[in-house]
Length: 473
Image (tube, rainbow, N blue to C red):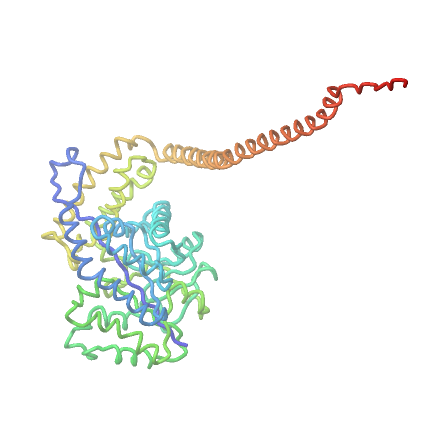
């Protein structure tokens, strides 16, 4: 049976405020709260909330047959909790349906996997924690920032216990192979690789309302027939796209939400099923081993990282940021660590792209670079105050190792203390119960002794009988 695997990706960054050179060392707050709130509310009202509500309707109308995945960054979840909690509530309803899988991404939607393995692991743990907290799911499938993937990442992800990783079905990666199969990673059988069908996904993302597109107009019946015409031996078609496809890239007036709502009916009619990414990896056997010696993404024609690190401005910003990764990890300053996450979001580096800076709010790539580097300069001063660069890396690593060992020992002792406290009330309760039983036993013994002693006392008090002598007649 052929299956469709829909996944919707969501991320939005904190917007940086205009930060001048003269603010360095004076102002430690970097964010434009009004602009950030406007952005999140706009995304929620036009795209995220209508999409999540539509997905809930589709699941109910199909009686749970429609299934999909959602990849949402931890940074965006923070912002939604703050500015659009109704989206979080709607997502919780999706989680309750058991028809939606929440896929893990780096918490800050960063490139930590390329620049700092330790930071990457830390972000994945934090992402898993917030998904567990909000949606009561433990993620087992991984969507890296911009679908970034290579063999080194596969080995790392497999060690962390993930069962599947998602990436772009790029031509240079596949060669003659089809993206409509499940593959095994070079890390071994424990990790499956799922590939995006770029042609069918982009048809919805970029051409749904394009009158010049060869397949225009696209409706649910025609799209289902197009998928049904694919070779029957290919088991899964992965349709992955940004959630902003619905309501922003393709506005509501284009009929995109009505199209999506009607799609399950025409798919089921053609005996095409739906799977979450995790279900696809679990149920469908790998057809071959897939190797990616170089980083692959879903960006642009080149399908690499050049949109984010392809020029000198981007490279300098990334190198200076991750140069202090070890020192920041040692910091306990909550505000500093929060800023660290926010400054890693990939959007900041895309805004420095001369050719395609995305939805930038800067006048130029150079203006984006100057503003970011001013912020980063102040951030680095704050890190320097806590862990000066005069400390050599070897000394820092030794100190870090000692701190890590101490943290593990503290965690172990806290666990023991917690267990002891947990059992302490029970011990007191048992002791009190014993005392109560002992008192009852003593009371019963006293009663028995009292009963034994009672007849003897009665006999002692009984008066002696008088002799009656008969008188002689």
